[in-house]
Each structure stands twice: as structure tokens, then as C-alpha cells.
Image (cartoon, rainbow, N blue to C red):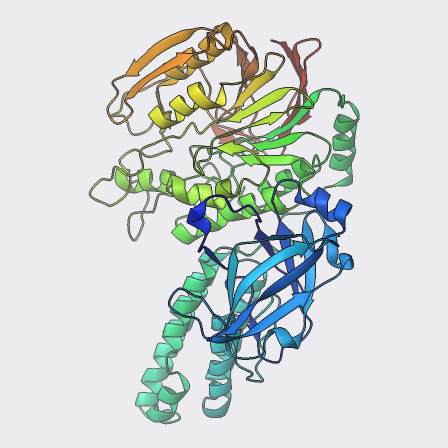
Length: 615
């Protein structure tokens, strides 16, 4: 049985978290009478993995079980005190602990309110924020399945099947088919939601016809049918809503096919050429997972296979970066767009042991606005205006607020930086689809669609100039990753053109980088409506600094320009397309910063080529 891993943090900064309650009931619940229930916790606080091994920390859990108040709290007055103390054998590596919870932890119906923690032999402890999950009654229906506990949808399925067995004949066969479809979808992580919707519509149509036949006296009584199918349609609607919830991450994630022997050998060859004294980066961009706007042949057949090839670098490089357009987001269903993004993000961030740091950037396809653009131009038919994923939704999907790799971010935004003192390198990732998604048209979706409207705004560029590029030690080398190129392309169109790119404030970005390299200062302004800029750079005190280059995808070609005063290096798309689909061949690369010889050394996989640039 697959066990869901609950990610927790023991870092509790500031008084604002004093009363914070983390509700884990979407991933874990219990029932009175349960015994030896496996719960896996992953702690992500800086240094906690080392402490687990060095101090032989043991996990514990304590709190109260009873009826929660409106703030989800259970106290000594409203509940029963419970506690669990494990052993050092419960530490399973990588920041994870397992707890096989005894029946005494679930003495009565209600909810658990308490906390998890780790304790050393001297009794010193670190604890998490307060935690909440449900404890159901002791009904013999334990509803244990391929996730820790059966969902409300599955309970409703069981109830409906039981009723149909006793009162309905022919409907049983149809319902079994529908149940099998839903069960398969639950086990595979909602990966084919469009087909599911189609099957549900067919099932509803057939049930409607059964009702008509029964009303005409062609079967059991209408009263019997009403009793058997009470709330069935409502159950289906609730099931759809549940399938749209965030996918739980477990220890046995498997998306895409295994790496072939041929590709494994090619990857081993690349890794063997990496100098461990250099700063080594794995870089994949423009994977375009899901049904793609260039061809329906691509779908999910290749994207996750390419990603699995790339993930073989985990532990062999210092950092791994997905450069944007990770999903194509062309499917008509809003729910499918969410699923496509989550599948990539989940596999990338949690599909391997994370021996290397991993960061996901945003591209112009990842928000699904290609569909909204088609809707507004009338080139595709939709039942309603397609939803554009807002920055806040994307940031949550990539776990930006979790700081999984101790990176520095601006209030949970997708852009980041991180220092690597042992290699004396600073890595910066930017969001080149920095659009004002709160400015809406009458259809309720953003005026500026990410598919065509790219560039940078005040908050991010000010952060870049006055945070990310400041306090860089003199012996460090800095490298920047973003989705679009640094230079303004020759095909730049005005804001009224709905079918080609516009790039906002690229000139401001370029000047910030130049000032950083030269140790100079500037006053920078831009009057572009909704993209206004007014900021100052000042690198005079810091002085000149080494800049290896600006790394990007987006254009699906390998190229380089140096006329900006620095390396502006483009890379092939992992998805083999340039205008038209060219077949299933992968492309990604390692990028090594050789500080001694001041070079960027690129080793290509698949279509990607080997290249070297000085800086």
C-alpha cells in the first residue's frame, strides 16, 4: 500500500505563526479502532537531516483527540490526551521518519490537534506547528485503499453499489463499469480527466433513460429507483470536485517510462565528463508536456520520458533547473491544465531523492493562456472562457513558499537566488512572464495573456537590482536563468497584436546586469502602461563582479549573442519542435562553470550539442 508523505517544517519564524494550524486531513486521517497506522513525515528545516543522523533523534507526536472548536483546536477540556514516542529505528533517511501509530492514538471520534517533533537523548526537542486531522467513528467500513484512507467519493460509491445490488438489476452492470473507471482514475492520479468527464456524461444519460423506462412501468417501481439512486448525481459532482484537489505525493511516484539502456549509457557518459571541482548544473527547458498546441501526436507519450532521462542527473550535479514551458497547457479543460502542471512539478520536485537542488521556472505556456487567447480570437470553441492560472496558483504548484532547498525568494514568488559557498557561485532564476494578472477584461480573465505578453515589472526588477545582485562576494561568479532571451527580438510587435510576442522592460533588465558587472549605478525608468518602472541601481561599493551568462529557452534553438556585453545563451527545447513537430528526440544539457579558466562548458544530451563559452 502506498503511504503518503507529509512534508512539515520545524522553522516557526515570528509571532504570526503562534496559532497556525496545519490541516493534513487531505492526506491523512484515522478511525477509532485503527492500529499500527503508518504515518511518514518529512522534515525540511535547514540542517535537520544531519541532526537526525548525528544525534540519533527519535520522532514523537502528542496532542488531544476530541471535538474541535471553530478554530480546529481540541483541548484538555474537550478531548483525550494522546502521545506516541518512537525510536531511532524510525528514522528512514532524507529527512523522513515513520511512525506506526497504535490504537491508543485514536480513542474517540473527532479530530487530532497537536504537533509532531523530534527528540534527542538529552530530552531536547524540535517541534512543528500545530497539526489537525480527522478521527472518524468506529464503523466497520474502514475504507482502506491505495491511499491511507478511502475518500468520501469512494464511500459514496460503496453505498450506491450496495443499494443498486438490492433494488436495481440492470443498473448494477452499468454502475460497475462506472465504478471501475473512477477507481482507475483515483489510482493513476486523475491523469485522464477529460475521458472521465465524457464517461460520466454517458453514464448520466443512461441513468436518465432508465428513469424514463421505469416511469412507463417497464421495470421496478419509481419509488424503488428513487430510493436506490438518492443523491447519486450529487455524489458524482462531489467526486469531480475531489478529483480536482491537489495530488498527494507518496513514496512510489511513477510518471512516464523507465529510462532506456541506450539513454542510460549516454547519461553515464555525460556524467563521467563532469569535473566535480566545477559548479555543475542540469538544465532542461520547453518540455511542453500534455497535449501540445503543435501536434496531438505528442501528448504525454514523450514529455515525462524526457523528464525521467533528465532526472538521472540527480546527485551528479549541484543544481537542476526546469526552464519554463514545462507543460504546454493546450487541453480545453481547466482541470486538465492543473493536472498537467502538477504532474510535471510533482515528478520534477519529488520523483527522485533530491540529492541535487531543484528549481522550476515559469514559461509563457505554463499559465494555460494559449486557450484564452484562442477563445478571444474565436479560433477554438469552448463552453466558457478558459481560466488563466494566476502567478499565485503557479507558485503554490512549484512549492515556492516552502523554500525546499533553502533558496531566497521574494514572499513566495517563483523567482529566487541561492549561494553555493563551496563552489563560490550565485544562481538566480527569474520570471520572464511577470504579467499583471489582476487587471481583468469583461470575461473575468487577465487582460495581459502570458502566451504573448512577456517581460518584467517593478517589484521583480527592483528585487534583482537591490537584493539578488547585492552582497555578492568578490570571488563569486553569478549566473541567471530565465525563460525568454535577454535581447529584444526583431519580431517585437505592439500591444495591439494578438498573435506575436511583446517583451516588456528587457532594456531595464539588460542595464541592471551591465551595472552589476561594471560596479556602476543608474536611474532606470519606464512609462509602459501597467509595466511602469522607477528604480535605481548602485553597485559602486560592491565593485565589479563576474557574470557567467544569461541562460534561456523559449525560442527552441541553440544560439548565443554577446553584443549586450554578456553571454545570452539559448538552448533547444526538450520537445522537438520549431514551428512544426519534428519527432520524438530529447534534448537537455549540463552546464559547468569553470571558474579557474572562466568558461561555461556545455555537454548536450540527445539533440543538444557540446559548446564552450568564455566569460
